[in-house]
Length: 435
Image (cartoon, rainbow, N blue to C red; front, side):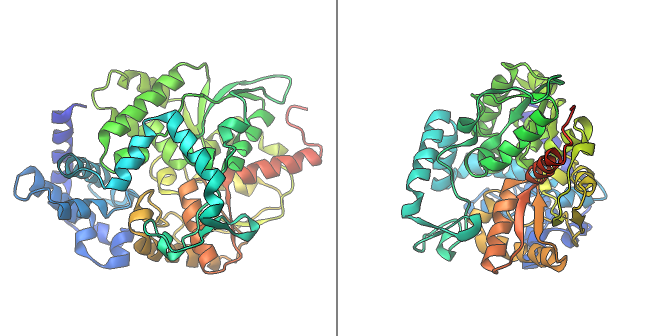
């Protein structure tokens, strides 16, 4: 879609908005602040005024477009189906074009363009993180030793332990299936957080796939999916990263593509269409997108659930926004969890409501994101379960921070880790897949 096409699309979406106010009842930011300026209908009106040159895209207007989690709840509950998430992203892009990015985001997104330099920077940072961050017991992450400005670190925000041995270094590019009869080849798009912060979740994904007879290939030249950049309005960087990933995927042989990050999956399967615009790689992406599955979708369709062993743990599940509304994945993880022998599952209230992470939103508006998160934490603890399971590393980081801050005993696991634990239990019980 070229620029004219994008403008027509946004104008059509704005016209569909009847200003009914349904968005007020489900917008997590509005519910936390009770401010009409934060609603979807308000932002649609704001964008209309921008397009009609009634107002200028001042830094103040830019901040109003920024104050949204892009959780897509307004779109999902809108009677007219207004794609307010796309309207807001266009507003952010226009504002960035006029006013630029914040210095911190500009530095970060520039770094994303240089894959090897980005990798070296994070691995070097991991080696020296103990100088600034203190490690917490029981693997709950790290907390700043001193109060640091930005991203909530001045309030001792808890962040994951960054590994000096990333997933894509731990694992070879090609991993053979454990079974004698192979089923085919899966391309694993790891994303950044599984690579640098939660490599054990990525190893669980590979374990599940190889246990079930799938060869795995991990493209060496994959880079950030681009979500942090294009959702912040840096369309140029988002498109650059999308094109790099399409080239990296196109260079490999595969039958399916698996992701274990909600944001990466939504980007690869749907969001790139809007990001790529009139890129010559749009058609290549259209072919790729049909092969993309979240790990829970793939397990349900292509793996053997009868080999899951007894796993006596008590869990509830949080729907990441980019899975439940970004990829339409909600039933699959629940169906798998309920198929695990011995596992007790209890649904929480408002499981699909945003936890407040929102990628860089929680870094810029940490206090507000904590307020939104508190509702989620209450609902998690009300279930009385011991574990919170989710399929998004950003949600995992934010929820772990909140649980640890309130000294909760509830632990957070990735869906893939629970599935892998059940397969390991099955192996001990003699339930070898294809044995």
